[in-house]
Length: 301
Ligand code: KIV
Image (cartoon, rainbow, N blue to C red; front, side, top):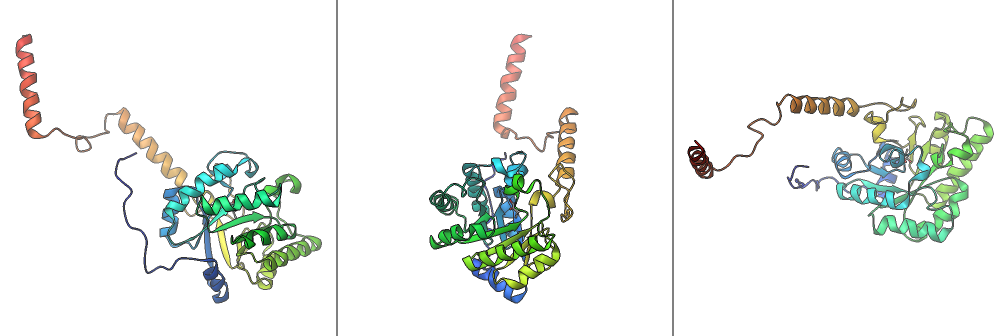
């Protein structure tokens, strides 16, 4: 790493801090809400400076950053490590932290203490919990402890083994009814927003019209109040074909590969570093050193 210290005062005083209240106002104004995942300082800072309103340290961290097969393995401590890094890069956006599998499933007390860790140690402003009406009581309890909660229904990746794979939810009438019950229960519980993942556009539109809380869609069509994508999907850093709903906005894989190959070729062919990229002795030291070397050379011959 270069030894240059982190620079730039990137807090823009003209840009108001995004809050749970301001995203609710955005829904009322029908101004689309943008959300992306981030897992590290540099990416979080770039996303924040680009004006994205919500940044989620998703448990997709498991696959995107840690190379796990699914989200089930990632731990509270691993999540917290990345939430802290992202916190240092975010000044304006609302920062959400995803409660990992097992951190809220055992008992409400443990769930509350894990949610509290994200706020106290990680600096998160909202915690996200997967699951519908069966989570409503727990969500109320966490909100009672002054921690805003984001709901997440539809295709909930932590339920992959119960769902039998990553399958679009709410495709038949009973599935639609269940999703509507889930959405209404979480809205009544007071969620700060509701992620709708992997559900038909028509169902997401019905939920968005029904609930007061902003809906944030991922694979849920354009009628949601906002959209979220995993940053690795957006940048082609996933090593897998994209899901139907992903739009690639850049090719970081190609950029990294080309840059690394160019560095390798330059080092092998002695093109890097150049004289301009090298440090030099001060003139007087160089003159002194030349004299010493010339004397040594004369003594030897
Ligand atoms: O973990 C994650 O990245 C998420 C988003 C896909 C909403 O939960």
